[in-house]
Image (cartoon, rainbow, N blue to C red):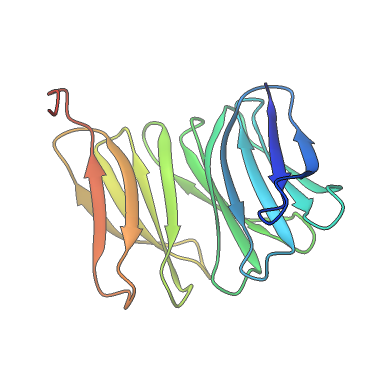
Length: 170
């Protein structure tokens, strides 16, 4: 319905409705819980105040935004888009900090536990590691098929990337 909803887990009451102009694909809370990010096929990610549901910033891409993730300190947000980029944004003012380019759709983003590295997953059959301060690519992890998910281990020493398979799992 082109919305995300905030709910009170104790009462089950709806606290706010967060409106987009198209399908919402993903949501993420900031580490302090004061901000929520939404990703949408309306080519935006949006930042919202969790206390009152007010929109704080609109982060624009050239195509649908599929995933969002906050850095561990909450100062940066990463967005993944089908415009072949992931982008890093300042959560305080919505300013774009870096553009991380792939050859095809970017499906997922994840920050390392220390916030110094970001991982991206793409239809270009790679997961990539990037320096969050400079936006410089650190490594390319090649796959046989498009990569749909990426995650860091809690100690940040291992990365897990999941590629799409066309076989049905039973």
